[in-house]
Amino acid sequence: MGWILVLSPTGVALLLILMELQGGHTKPCYVPKYRRLAYGISSDTWTRARKELESYELLTMHRIPQGGDFDYRLLRNAYWINIERLKEVPSLGIFGQ
Image (cartoon, rainbow, N blue to C red; front, side, top):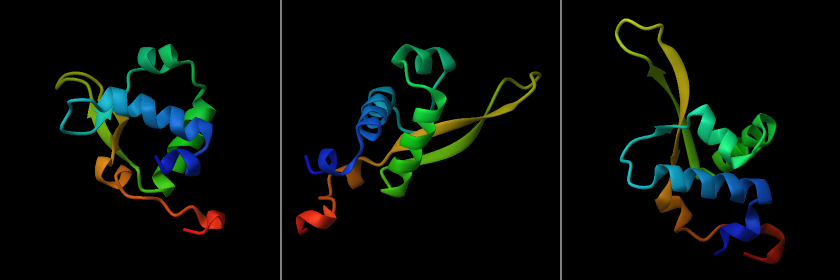
């Protein structure tokens, strides 16, 4: 519950999006463009929220190759939410914790 008081609304939105996408996976996931568009979050908002989540060590971003052996291989961002970190109580700064 404490993280909702610390994160910005866009940080909370991206956290929920990535948790839904991560559900059941055991390694970082690439988010296809059509899925990003379905959530209606601009690239700028996604980037700002990603940096915020990374700053709190809630999110880790990896670069993974996409494409087959005979395709041009692109590096894509893959995301992983640190569920154990979410279970910790965040420091609320001015609120005295």
